[in-house]
Length: 331
Ligand SMILES: NC(=O)c1ccc[n+]([C@@H]2O[C@H](COP(=O)([O-])OP(=O)(O)OC[C@H]3O[C@@H](n4cnc5c(N)ncnc54)[C@H](O)[C@@H]3O)[C@@H](O)[C@H]2O)c1
Image (cartoon, rainbow, N blue to C red; front, side, top):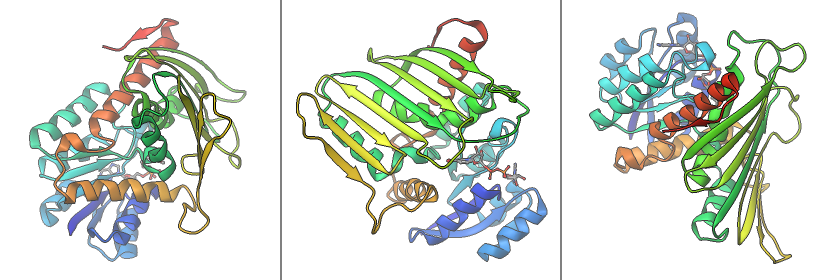
């Protein structure tokens, strides 16, 4: 059994803790939040010791693995410190997205994990659903043939204003860029337009063009401006032999073979299927603890820190393009 702690007991840290407690590979041994009330509430809810200092928890409990579910400025500035503390303490770490919006710090997180030989994953929960994995298997089996284009879109209502003009670009798009990289590989060039919808003080809807290293072209539409209730994510990948569309992470995946009027459709089953968004966390977290339990090499981690860093670099390039009006090359 893997002995696991969670750092950051907001809604998402509590979700990690609940999922760990339900996972047969894991014993949840402690929780931590620097807000005492949150730490105590979570400790009592999960029946485990609680702490207000991550280093104190790491040294008292010496867990095998840790989730870092802190937030902060642009929903990520608090990821760096506890991730480094946990890695230095010898833990494998599963960190929430975005890895870190300061690229130099994100690079250091990846470097420290590599130097310590620890597994470092990012909670890219969208890529772990049965529908997303089936689509990946279609691609790996060559059923799309030589790849041509990818169209990704994610729109999710988040009312209000933010203290960063780039909040939506940085906090939402790691998932979408990761899905695009998962299917299509590394991004070489980026160009971005964005708008501030009426009443907004930040770039709330964006249109991002990409060229991939393999020559494919791609596009990402992202928005915080459409109220929830209807489908919210769509990923389409096309090659000369076929095209697939994954709808809403887990709802449906459809393969359209080129020149064949018969399509293959996977639909989320009524019995045993996903019920809601929380289930995407369950599969992602289980994959991480399974890989760690089975002794996976850090480089084998599905949805790794390196993937998180690569996604953040694409987003940083999109922001540079938005600010300068130029196409930005990724080195
Ligand atoms: N994967 C997904 O689909 C998904 C969805 C929503 C949010 N998220 C991510 O989850 C993270 C958490 O989101 P949230 O809404 O629960 O945030 P939140 O701000 O409500 O909670 C974060 C908690 O971390 C605590 N914290 C910060 N630094 C700490 C430290 N060094 N030691 C101990 N505690 C610390 C804060 O006190 C706070 O209680 C964010 O990074 C967000 O981007 C991911």
